Length: 225
Length: 111
Image 1 (cartoon, each protein chain N blue to C red):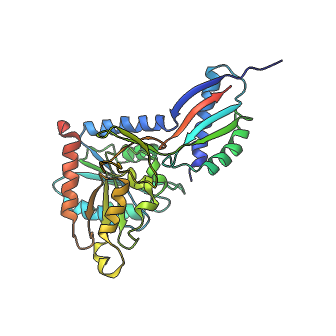
Image 2: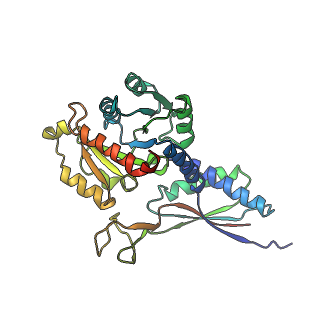
Image 3: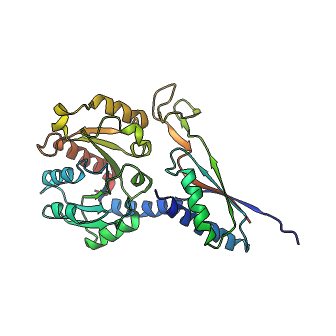
């Protein structure tokens, strides 16, 4: 018996379904005026510290909630929960967050109607770049202690981000880091990248960063506000 | 890093296509990966070899087409290959739109 081989042409992005799911959640949150901000960086770049400073700055003027991703422990949630509603997402070893975990975190917070929902991703400049968490804004942090040559090493992360925040500006006098060099390297990959420089410990740059968040929210879905 | 979960998703989708077409056997699965797909072809092949064997599409061969990163610049109307992850248009220096090489694409399934 001979068997005939039939080739079916598909040409479909393997992640098409996951991307469609994310788009539905993104639209649902947009309709209630919640700007979703996915915060990404290597471990220790200062995501939690920036979120603490952001929460203090927005307090009384805007509502926000945070979903914090980590492999283990609820240390970040403990830092943030005195300031804002926070849910810890523990990945149990996985190196990135995925949409179902984000949805579970939202449900754990009682599906809050807030102006800003921040997702603090797992510290990692590789895998989180490949996962759409229904964010409207993707923010990559890079600390002055990490070195200004990082964007070129992690092209997908910087290509898919809207904003780069250079953190730990207070360390600049002590480390060989050039703001111009990091900006040039990152904008070669993403020419439209917005950029902020902050020192969350002493508050430098926090006002400009928060103003940008507010403007982004109005720009993204002013029609719903 | 997440090639195993990608392969699981690939096998699920391939098996759904097999069932849609009432086929007993999948002989070949063809995928396309590019420099910005976040997928390492060697790891993908290894994960496929391991996971396909214990799935409904056991015996299928995986063919990986590695493609270059392609982009176009709308203002200039040019399409070109991006070398060195420089996403600026060689003519106007503006941002480009990636048209190929940023996805893991299921190209075809042979039954």
